[in-house]
Length: 252
Image (cartoon, rainbow, N blue to C red):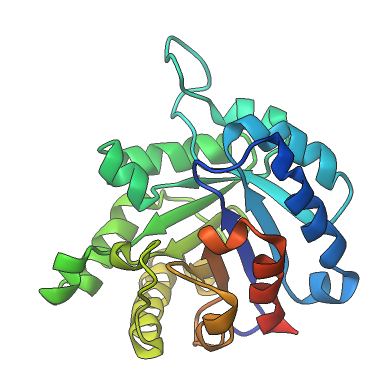
């Protein structure tokens, strides 16, 4: 964890969750006591259908609600899309952009990710910008070059520690049960910190850098203790309050 940077553990529910899942959210709110909240920030990013309901449930609690994506425009003829303004109106305080599944499934390149981050900022929300290499890129030794290119292309000018979070998610580790070694994570996060510091000065030096990719209670302590890892972007393990709280327990 970076010095003087309060960590964030954010849950990305992806395309999972119906209204009945509010029971898991309530269990999270109940288990996220003041002592834990003083040490680590918590956020859940449910599917868009649940944002408003979840925001109502969390109310004045310390659990924040985010969204998983947004369109670059505020409004218009974009059937099926949601703008950052819409998800803000529903109660979200942050939006994930550039997740590898969006990059792969929807062909979103760095320029689109950058435009989405700017749309997020226009609504005074936090952009959680994702970067990560594929298995082929890692095996060919291109990991750091890929990360540098994605940061340069996806993070807009004007990024600050307040409006931007960077999440490193090696594509080959997402939902596979595979995780890079602590040294692998350290190498990438050190590279990101260096690149962001060069680009944004003190803001880049204090920006939160999350690790994501098969994070679970059993490996959270090791991963969260790596230098320049300021929390986690959690997938499947965020669907159950007990697992998500177990990951945050790495900071107790």
